[in-house]
Length: 202
Image (cartoon, rainbow, N blue to C red):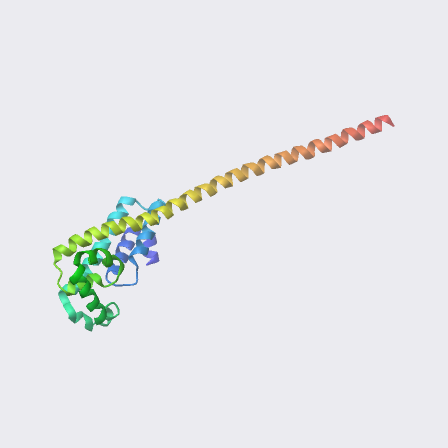
């Protein structure tokens, strides 16, 4: 994945976010912070990257929801999804959905793996899911990209500052070298004049 994101950053991060939404070990927050860092460092175009990551997050979320909605509880027989969801975890999520359906999706959906899968399993309406997910994803992306952007901008400022310091240091070194050469020259010349005067007196 590192090679993919290095050569094709937009496609690479889109795929990573989709896979992360499906339960693969690619934390959404970390991925978005990295994207924000690249924006801040002016390595990628901000509007293109925002569109790509927004689409990637929504795609991953919807695929997770769709799988849960299509296969229901039978999905628990899959070894892959057993690692993401246990019966106890599903029961806990169901209770949370019963009490705080929309707030739970808005908040926990971005932080806890498997929430959108359970939303599909228990039959949350597709329209409601898409609206809530679009809002929560937008807010989360702004926050995570913002954090990464600050880091990327700071890195760019530090890098610029280092270059300036190097230039100043080089200039000072040149000035000190010239001063040292002049000092040695006049000091040597002064000693020469003094010797000439001493010889004339003798």
